[in-house]
Length: 404
Image (cartoon, rainbow, N blue to C red; front, side, top):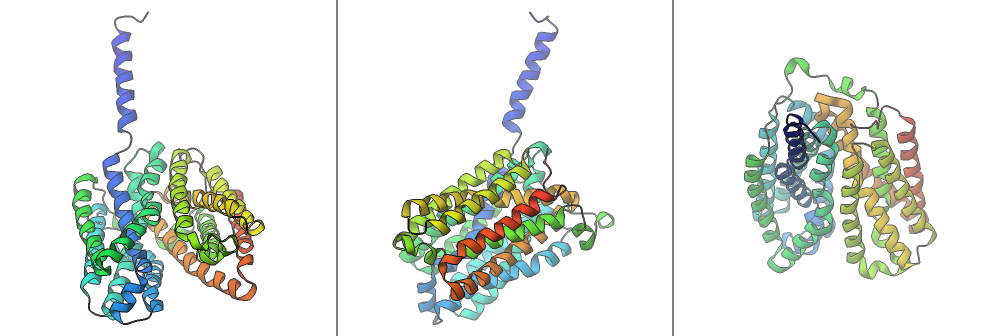
């Protein structure tokens, strides 16, 4: 039996532990951040879902509307590093709220613009905002939690990405079909402003970096393990996009091209599952999770390469693919944040540039393969690339050490 002195102490400790377990993650702020990520992704990809309407109304080709997505992504890749370097001293909350309001203005201008050029300029500005958002969002989320839970906090913030692909784009596309493409962008603009208010109330304030303590870009890049993280990211994202960019022709042999919306929904739902799994394990098993994600993506590509005509196997492969890629943002952004410490935003900007550059390169390489050898070669090229990613991740000791 506990003594009268130790019993209250034990009770207080137990109560404190219970309180700590429920309060260890600031869910309100993290969900606000996840919603901002969600809006950022939908803002980027929405023209892809509204190609016919925008093309007809603006008097341009569908390819030109597609360029609105490409211009956004390329601008993000090119400007992420320099803009992050220029804004390192700006208080993080002030910068984040400015970016959210900026997304609202970009969507609002798109909704009311009368010509294609104005929209292209607005989208270019949106790409610049996105580069900054992706650079600071991961570090912001991880700073909101204690170190032993930073990876889980990141996974909650990053869940906005697969949710945007799985549900945000279809909902916005449906809204555009019912009310017109301008209405879809107007709703997105209004949502961004509402999120800015929520974020202002829910997010803690973090200072920018002090001038005397800011390492240069070269110094950050030379941090042990960071180059390996960037190389792993490049190979993994390139592998994904070589195949995903051409997923429509990829599923033709199985007859699932007539159900492409269902295929993409399966991918998106399982990508959300991938975020949840990676979030639960990233803090303790970062390297293992990176290798498991690479193995899952490799297995999915192997299945698509060997059994492309089997619908059930293709669905299973797409589900496994979704799990692998869904967890990738958490895993590949947690590592540089740990490596770089106070310079995490700069390290993340390098990941953003690498990620978006790999998206563009994946579309380019996949297109060359498709034209030269046919769709059947795409899974094998992707498999070779993901093997490279796994080799880099497994041989660099400093890149993916455990977070806690």
